[in-house]
Image 1 (cartoon, rainbow, N blue to C red):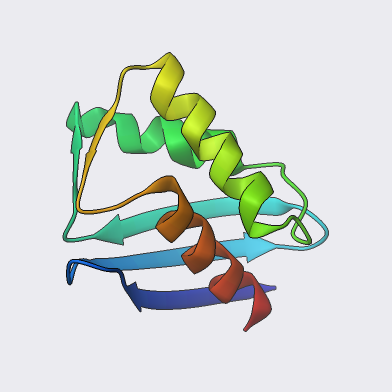
Image 2 (cartoon, one colour):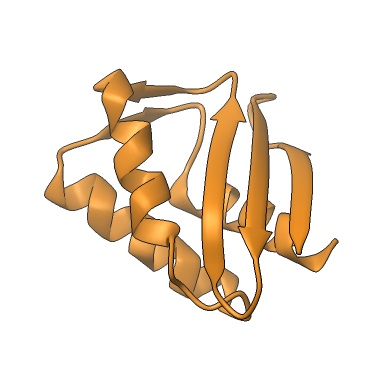
Length: 94
């Protein structure tokens, strides 16, 4: 199955998630008008989410993102692990 979700997070930034999934996330693309430093770190977050259960909770997804952010010293501007997780769940539910 495939899903797309767009979510305006607090602060007015837009997060878009495109996902292909069955029982697990198979492919994911995260887009938006937020910033990550270094810019190439978005792919690390996407890779970390591939293979997680499509029935994961928002907290589980956010923790996975937080772990990647922390271990790679990623700076998130205009977006949080929780806001990305929320958008992932919206994409999986549609």
